[in-house]
Image 1 (tube, rainbow, N blue to C red):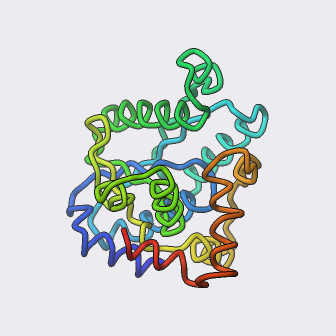
Image 2: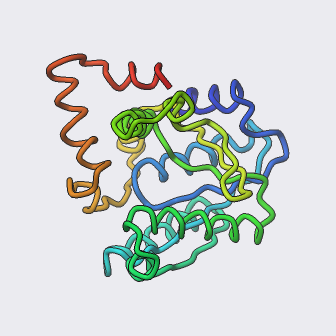
Length: 226
């Protein structure tokens, strides 16, 4: 996993020597693996690493435990941490938007402030090859054009924020396997199993059905399309 992440960083020119990278860490397997990877690669790449965690306050006590887990992880890895909190359910009601959209909006607003606060050159998010496949299917279903079907990009400007995705060529199962091999824990978000959310339905029902009935390598095929 580390080798693949380093290869992506170098081939896509995501990080330059001397950069300060702020890693968005939710506490889930993907973001925890990304933080570990960038900390381990920091000396080799010549970069500084900080972490940021936003408590979305969607899952009550579980959200607080996520925040506590990330704080402990940051201390153990000796990584500076910027923490924040937003009542995403309230934001969704106020703006009359979906919980997913409200969470995304709150997350990037927080990351922009956190990056400015620590003087970070970019923000790294833990989007994986699986996220890419899901995104392509969702956009295809909604009728996206060629730009939309390009999927998630390795680098993007979002609300004036330089965002990089060093794990875009890594499968989620690879990240989980790496964490287990190194005895590392992570937090499971129970809402990720709720198929009422469209992305979760694609993740847990649509893609497995396509793998079983049409193409066992459909995730790879969708990533190649992107």
